[in-house]
Length: 105
Image 1 (cartoon, rainbow, N blue to C red):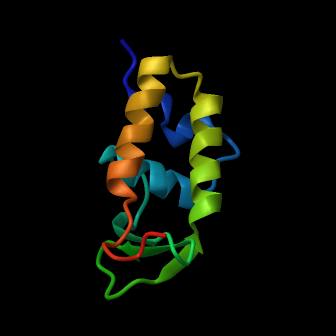
Image 2: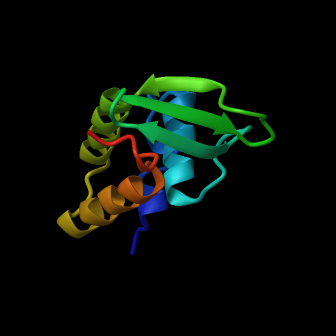
């Protein structure tokens, strides 16, 4: 059986950006980039995602939450996941890319 990590591995996607490879690795608990992502904080109210790289102090990247969700879903589409695999991948994303308490709409 092929695992989610195998199906979403950056080597399968020639157009995957290093940033998206780092996101996928973070969500799946893999180390596919150097540095890898150590933490993601989300403010849904501002539609922002804050990224802290391993070894970094403070957040050093800010991205659109909407864009990140759209890109994650496009990756899942391209990976050819089963319905169960997609459900699991979405669940993992939601647990790792979760809003900061008190910032939801």
